[in-house]
Image 1: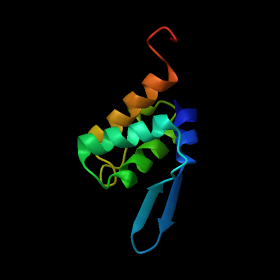
Image 2: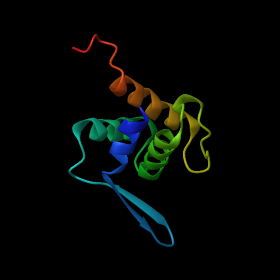
Image 3: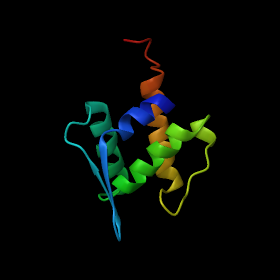
Length: 97
């Protein structure tokens, strides 16, 4: 799960100025684009900073489901959507089919 989150982070461009601006690269894999759509559908547009923070936290944590998340940057419910998505991709439950 951590490795997948780290791989996904490579597809973001981060611009740190007066305001942090995060963009998802057009060349991102379809799974990451699907996660971005899921987050947008559930939480509204403009949540790429939250998605980036969730992926960063998951990539750095030894056990992402129990990681501490900065709720000022990323709502806890959004983080758990991301962790659930990563878990489903990292460990398929459909028998690998």
